[in-house]
Length: 248
Image (cartoon, rainbow, N blue to C red; front, side):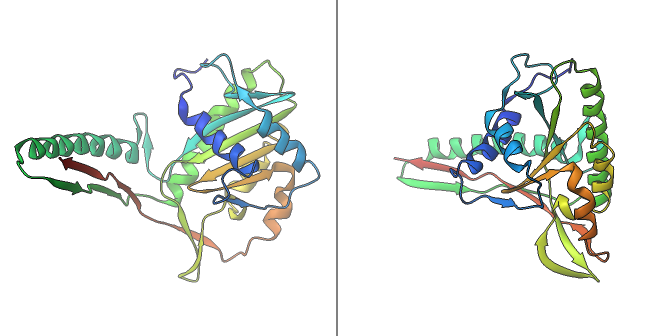
């Protein structure tokens, strides 16, 4: 049993991937990793997965013979109260609510037809790859513990990992290579995931408007293709809140 009941975040995340597989979201980018003939099996599992009727229990979604469990990771520092990003976002949300109240007051005082626009934004820069790896491993192990207590069908296990913060730039010799972070290029996390190949058969990694589907048994092939010189540098996380007021 988990302390927090499943909300809309998990369902929205999986729904976006389902829509892409169905061709409904063609603007998304699906990374084509080397997959075995089981690819269609994985695809069918994703498309047929339904929310667990027991909303406060592991896993989040069920399909015939297996499950999908969703969790988020972050490049921001985490503690028992959550990530630094989430704390700043909470403060920013309150500031936005206050600025919108001020906008409403300006509209009430105005006697002319006019439009007010304001764009408060928050820039979060305290990100690091080390924080990301730590978050990934900590949350992964936590959900593995839940899996070990699970007594339902688990012949096929899928972890749906969502990056909830800033992403990274691909770097080599101090140069930005023009591409962002992909899990199938991560020579630190792939071996870690591979240790759990008998429990987790597939990992879906979602970040911004792309996702990857990686079968854990294919990880040794992926590792051989990663350039040794490749590393990652964090980017900024920018959150904007456009507020528009119209006085008619």
